[in-house]
Image (cartoon, rainbow, N blue to C red; front, side):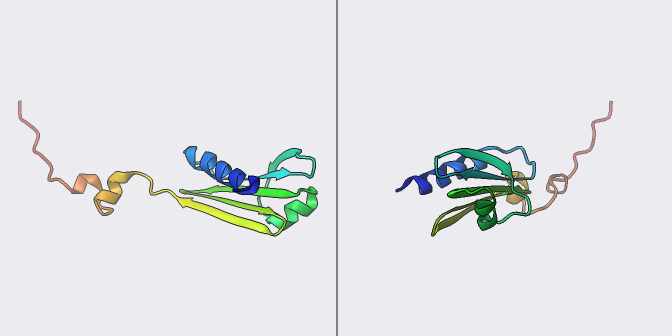
Length: 111
């Protein structure tokens, strides 16, 4: 596997490990001399970022709600990795039924 694919996988692994829930969109840009630049990528496509910053390789990391998407481009090589988080497992196990409706209420003990 070449460096481009390894870096895309590493960025994706790191981006999916963080679970702060904040929405964000950044670009990681690498120029011909391996200089690194990180910029706000909101509203930018990979081609436009590469042209604007004269980058040979561009990676975007988009975090929105429960999903993380990493897009990468280096010349004609391009990939997209995406993961959608299922969130809290309890609602999924209960079929979306609020937990207080699953079990009958137990009457309070009288003193």
